Picture 1 (cartoon, rainbow, N blue to C red):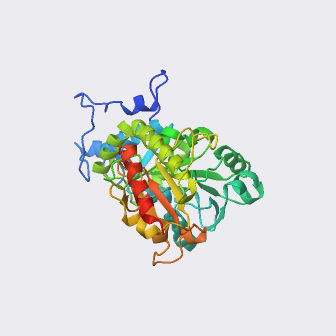
Picture 2 (tube, protein in one colour):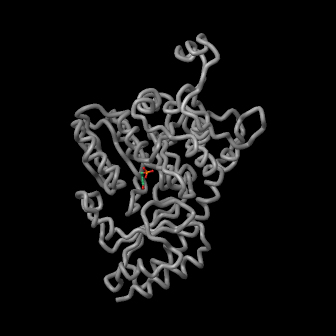
Length: 391
Ligand SMILES: Cc1ncc(COP(=O)(O)O)c(C=O)c1O
């Protein structure tokens, strides 16, 4: 599979311009077709044999390779500054695929605290079955305590982290990891390539839930892993074909469309969220706002639309949630629509302890994914809901 995406021009190309690149084809169609097919046929026995010997670059089965998916991978790798990318059927499949490409039985992982709850569950409920153990550390410990890296195979980062949006200095973590021979991966879903390019700072593998900002339209569940040719070898040659969670062609097509407007959307999400974060911070019923700003760590160049805040004891979460007229309640984030998620609801999940319990998130914490609506209308909705939440 040829997923080499290095730029062929010497001009300095911005992300917005790179994502406007048309699909390379003889018909001049700017948009790729959707190859909604499971398999590809061959003209002759000899052509089939050549494909199996990898003498020709011809897709043969969509679990492994599909031209529409390949176009998404090509464009996405450009965005992330990677040699290549691999599309997955979900963000959590991308996270699992990246982890499985690095660790073996009985290896040790260190992971940032407050990691996305299902990544935590994957580490605690799946990886432990293979003797792979994980310890969780604050950003300060990861940055300043090299002894925690002793004997570690993989460092799992998210920055900013889910729900609390603390940032981690990637450059410090990479330096410690390299000194200890450990590999590094980061979930970059919050920042997107518009606001943070972790590969430039020495991270080995970057993963995304493409269901969030990469799609941007809340219409697909998808994931992607990217990195250098060397770092991606096991992902592409072993995990993609044998893990069996390849991105589908229709989803890839939606993601290509999402990439076209990513830069523009992130600017709007970031600006609106900054304004709302500022107003929340000055509101009498709010005791704390968590919002990662550009420059809050050296590698973060901009903000996204995702923030959280804590209602003071003078406000009631239930009345607050029920008072909204524009903002909707739900999980997920990164779409065109503003979504709110009260962690109090997440803490009542039946299954078993989740990372919200483990890391001690306040019951009054609310996560807000600020969408693309008019920001003044959004604020009016939030303000009226806050006034109705007063006890
Ligand atoms: C930070 C983060 N990473 C990964 C995921 C998993 O992605 P998906 O839902 O696409 O499997 C999510 C989903 O909410 C997330 O918030």
